[in-house]
Image (cartoon, rainbow, N blue to C red; front, side, top):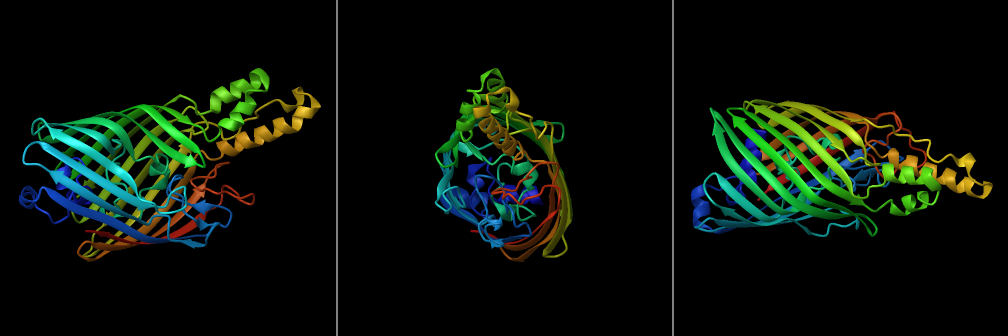
Length: 414
C-alpha cells in the first residue's frame, strides 16, 4: 500500500519508526540512536522552450528553456538521525539537499524536533515539523514512498513550504472500527523566495485528522496563517504613489499581512494489488498569489514488481488573471508610461496564479530491495492567461497549448 509503505518507511508521526523499511520495533528498542535516509536521482525533459518546468517555485528546476533535459527538478538526498529513549522522549533530525534558489544543493534542516509521549494516545512535539496539510504532507519529498515521480504539481506545487517551527500535539482515538489521529499545530515559517526577498508565515495554525480502516485512509486538514511576501514590495510601493486608485490595487494584491487559508481532504484506497487515491482543496491567499481550487485523482495496479499508474490533476483560479489596473489616461502625460508599465507588471504577477490541468501516466519498477525506477509522462496545459506551474517564463511563451514532460527517477532508501 502507498500509505502503509510510507508509514512503514518514515512514519513521521512516530519518530521511533523513522529508521528503515525493514527495521522492527524490537530492534529500535535495542538501538536508541538510528540513522536512515532516502534519495532520488532524476532526469526531466520538457518540450516547452519558453519556460521551465518545476515541481515548485522555491526548488526550481531547469527543464525546458534553461536546459532541454535537467537533473535538478526532483533530485534530492536526505539523511535522518533518530533518538528513542527508553522513557517517553524521542527526537529526530533530518537534513535534505535539493535544488534551491541559490542554484545549488546546499543541505538544510527539514525536520528538527523533540517529542514527548504523555500516554500511548497523546504526544507533543516542539521544533521543526512537517506541516499537517494534504494527504502526503508528511512524506511528500520521500519519493520512494510514492507511486509517481512527484506529487501532482497543481496541488503540491501550490504549497512549496513543507515545514514550520513551533509546536504540535497529536491524539490517537478510536470510534467504532475507525482509528483516528488528530493533530494540531501552531508555529511560523520563513523561506527565501528570491534574492533577498522572503515569505514569512506567522500565526501558522493547522489541524488535521487522519482516519484509517482496513484498506481506506482519509485525511482532512485546514491551515491558516498571516502571510507576508516581500518579493513584489517595490512594485506596490510605486502603486501607492498613484493616489487612491494605486493604493486600492496595492491593498488588493500586495502580500502584506494577508490572512491565507488552505483546506483539503484526501483519501487512498489500497487493496495491495491496486490503489485509488485523490485529493481536493481550496487555497486563498487574498492577493496576487491567488484564490484557487485544486484536485487530483490517481489509480494504479501492481503486477509483480511493476506498478503502472494514471493521474489527472487540475488547478482552477477563482479570480481573474487580468486587471485593468491604473487608469493611465487620467494621469499627467509624464506619468502615463510608468502607469502602463506598472499595469503590465501587475498582470505579469497575476499570470503566475496556477490555472492548469495535467494528464499523467507512468510505471514504477521495484527492481531490487529498497530501490525503484520510475518513468512518467505528463501532458500539462496552462489555461487562459496563466503560466500554469511553469517558471522563468520568456516573452515567446503562449498559454493554452500543451507541454510534454518526460521524467525518469531512481529512488532509494537506506
